[in-house]
Length: 237
Length: 237
DNA sequence: CAAGAAAAAATTTGATCATATTCTGGGCCG
DNA sequence: CGGCCCAGAATATGATCAAATTTTTTCTTG
Image (cartoon, rainbow over the protein chains, first blue to last red):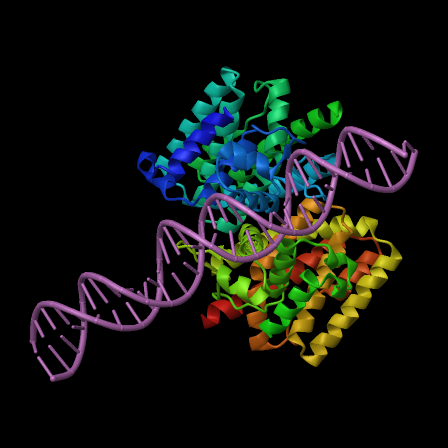
């Protein structure tokens, strides 16, 4: 699997003609590496506590040290990776205290993003969001953890993208990177069935342009999901 | 002036014996560069819009490209610098929308940090904070802009350090990095006299252990300062 | 002939890599 | 059990290549 990524990256970088997607074609290698790792973290392909080495990544991704180095620094700054003192980097393990802070910050920021998005979204955009939510439901029914994580992210990110609030969106993205690996563990252990989902309420309020309703539904969505995560993680560890 | 910084850094890195401070002595060069730039941004030694070049920094700081590169990526991730499309990096210029988002996020996060800190702080720690505030007042009376910026930061950071909330503190630090250069411009244009300051209220409530009072005073402190900044910046630009 | 615009060369800056050096942690021996 | 050595990993540099900007040159046109 890592080999597959390696080949893809190599093709995109070295053999320019084979990189079909114009969006990814011209991106410099350090950004490529950043986005690759970011996805792996966000969608739980990395386990909390797992060590991350520069050399390992240069080997598996087939790029030099400098781009890997830059990507790792960026991810550390994001909170997606942690620097463990002695030149050692790993995927973060969340404490109860960490999760409580994440809950507070997510509720504050993502409610406001929802509020802002409500006033700007067109019917078409709401339709697109609803379509994402249907895909999400299918993933849940199928027990597809990876699909669940991706579609759930797509739902939230899609909503926040309409808020015209780059600073707040940026903060929200960072918070997601922190709990990505842990959420994956919880889903893997518990399945996706009993995860709460206030998305239907959100869409209803969006259509009615009730900003406060959207904000409250989002706050509940966030809180319920995160509390479940906190319970599962602190009970077993 | 830049030459002074260059010499200092060179001494710290190359001539290890002259780096007296044990805290900074062993740090790798990329962290040195990061913290140097971070301070320059936080305390307004850089002007909004100013371009930042990698080669320029390698020359002026006397270190190789890789550490500079890493430091810049980190600062971009922090929001302290912005990537301007064509490989070009500069100090951010805040829009009205940006400032409004910063106000919201700062109030939410820094109120909570204050709330948490209230319950934990000892009398000695409150005394230390009060001492910082006295130094701050002296800087204001002297019209010392740099001193004002540093002491004001010290006051807030000192308070948040007692909150036992690394995730939230981290978010707060990031937000400060975003408006550092702009705040400096406002102070330079307007002086430090008419800047609002709720620090006395904060300290009083801290001593009485009134968490809500501290949070509200902090929210006012933040809001008043930021609104002033927004007014000045949007009026003149 | 002068002015302006387009084209081309030169310079500057960024991106990547290979290599040398330094540091850390684990294993081995006294 | 403690100190020493070594493999491996991280840090830092300079070289090299590529991209972009700036400057210079040239050509056209009024």
